[in-house]
Amino acid sequence: MLAEEMALGMRVRYPRTGTAGKVLRIEEIRGVTFAELDSTNLLYRVDNLIPATATNKSDPAIQEDAKNIIAREREYAAGSEFQDALKNIDQSCEGGG
Image (cartoon, rainbow, N blue to C red):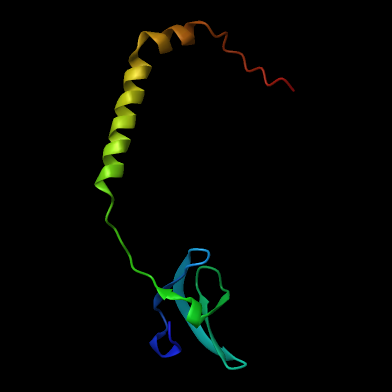
């Protein structure tokens, strides 16, 4: 990102670590422009930052997978195998240490 494109309050992301935040201040040190992010209060080189885009969209495939997993877990918990396993424990917590 170019230093001219940077503005206070702009949401940016540092792609190497995934750190994101709002720009608190812009500072030039020895000819290199840095921006301080509110999430870490650290300075990041402006040329290493990219604009952060907020995406509130969720992947329908992930939602469907989660629904399938929940249904499968409920089915197992209601089944006789799980109930038999619960009957065969003595409710003690043996940590072994």
